[in-house]
Image (tube, rainbow over all chains, first blue to last red; front, side, top):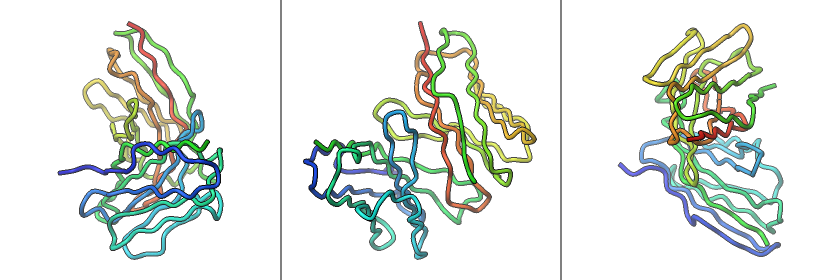
Length: 116
Length: 111
């Protein structure tokens, strides 16, 4: 079956503009995650969704960042009034969630965001 | 708090063994993972180990866990140029959804 897909693969925007990044998880996966990967900074957790529970937003760096997951499937990460420090690769992952004891996450290829 | 640390770079010659090390702070971690990220791609699970195990072997990969010292290592035997990638150590709790990742170790394999 299809893996996790993300769009766009690359996004170049001007400082101050809003951007939306999309993630299509693997069908049947109840958990969905967003991470940010900056050069030399490793993988930074942003937010995760699990079924119908309230999302864990503890990793969002500022109120300019928000995410939605509609119908328990597709998710959109929105960054408002982008800043140059938002430039990074944004990775989405999904997992079986409660259906599995260990939490193997399946990652998409990422969206590379460049803020000029 | 939860923290996972690993060195940033490792360089080995083709055919040698690679050993990538990781330390974690959360003693209640139940599962520990090694993920691999190739250029331009997302992370892919290589292997995982349950916290009541000391060792796990899978073909060229050997995972060693020292729970007392909270130290995890990944040994790659007969390292090939195709093993060049970033390797991430991670931990989670049983039934938990939040996984904490290290910063990743970039493995360079010289021909």
